[in-house]
Structures are given as structure tokens and as C-alpha cells.
Image 1 (spheres, rainbow, N blue to C red):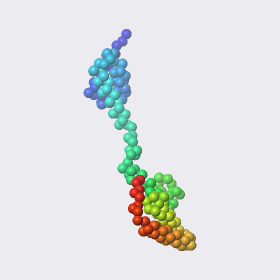
Image 2: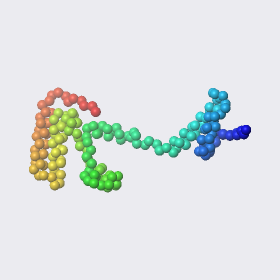
Image 3: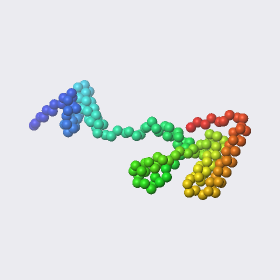
Image 4: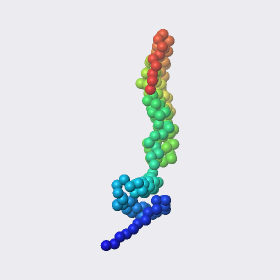
Length: 174
């Protein structure tokens, strides 16, 4: 029969090769010391912590799960929608040109959010969006005229509604 003695210096664990550290873990677990032996338990803890320290050093950390911009974006997107800049779909995804075209877009208030914030506000926003779309270069001139008229009518209704009301506006919370 052959007996093998393996010495483990827990003050030098950070210097051991990964393969020896794995061996040290198995040896420390197979230690014939009685259950509850303080030194045996301490050695296993030190080896385990060194293994975890090395493993965490090689594992990429989660960087993007929570970000400071998430909260404002969450609230903004409840009341507005983002329309990316024109032409971004035809560009190669993740290219600099695609990113630039996408970020050339704009935020527009959601008509339903405007309606919740101000009586008749939804109609004004919808009319303003239609007017904005109609006024784009190359748009139909008559569509623009009709949209401008609809916007003016919606604004008149909004102004009449807001001046006729003596009651305070309802408080809207996100």
C-alpha cells in the first residue's frame, strides 16, 4: 500500500495553478478529519473562496441589466413614442450610418397620453402629427391644407374646453 501526503498552504492559494487548486479542493473534501473540525472546515472555505474568486474573474459581469437611463426612458415611453430617422431600415444593422440615421429620429407625444393630460389634447396631438407628416418635403399639398385646418379646429376645441372649465384639472400620475 502507498500513502501520499499532499500539503496545502492556504496562505499561498492565489499562487497555485488551477489544476492544483482543483486537486486541493478534492483532497480537502476527502480529509479524514472528524466532522466539524475547525481547521478542516477553514481550509475548505479558503480553497472554495479562491476558486470562486478566479471563476468570477473570468466570467463577464452583467453590465446592462439595470442602468440609470432606464427609469426616465420608461416614463418617457409611457407618454411618447420614438420614431427613428428616415432610411435606417435600409442600412446595414449596427453600422455607424445605421446608428446615426436611427438617432436622427424624434419623440412624439402619444395622443392617448395627451388626452389623459388635457381634455381634447389627444385630438390636437393627432392633428399636429398629421399636419407634420403632410408638410414633409414631397407631401401632398392639399393633404397639408386639410391637416392644417383640422389642427386649427382641434386647437379651438381645446381652448374652448379649457376656458369653459372651472373645475381644476385632474392630477395624472404615471
